Image (cartoon, rainbow, N blue to C red):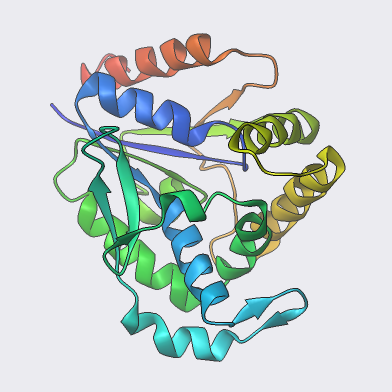
Amino acid sequence: MKITIAIDGYSSTGKSTVAKQLADWLGYIYVDTGAMYRAITLYAMEKGLIADGFFDKDSLVEKLNQITISFLRNTDSGKAEVCLNGKSVEKYIRTLEVSSFVSIIATVSEVRSKLVQQQQVMGEQKGIVMDGRDIGTVVFPNAELKIFMTASAEERAKRRYHELLERGDTVKYESVLANVMERDYIDTTREDSPLVKANDAIEIDNTETNIDDQFHTILQLAKDRIAKRI
């Protein structure tokens, strides 16, 4: 039996990491919904529709029918990369600049509606692991396993800071922390599909948990659900 696994939570809690691990181990399809919102954010930036203190929401909504988001497996790395209108944009969507705008883009109801429809189609056949902000509450409210991930803002900022440094970006920890806290505020207070823990979700606080222990904890939960033990 295959199930749907929905992983929600705050930014930089390692949702994508554990989702990829689960998908690989179970032989499931992994969908990075955050990358989908980041791709639309990149599109808006490239078209001059969003910048510091400026957001032309109406023009973005008008252009949504010109945007196609897909995932393509990189033959060299073996990893799935997000594509914007047929072009891989994986290396362009992880910057701090995109991070600073993505939560704003995600507040747009029309954007969320477009992506939720795509995500629900992807999950019709089960055997899928999807992570984001509203997967267990909006996209897959009937998912067999729902995980809600959290960690302290300071710890999440440290992780993001070191990730950006390893990429070669020049950033300050204080700027990353401010971005994490701003995203938390926007994600939890937006009117359309705010970040909330589903009533039947299992909360995982990984402030002081390493990646391997976290993976095995969630993997065991998945095995139990697949075997209908819980």
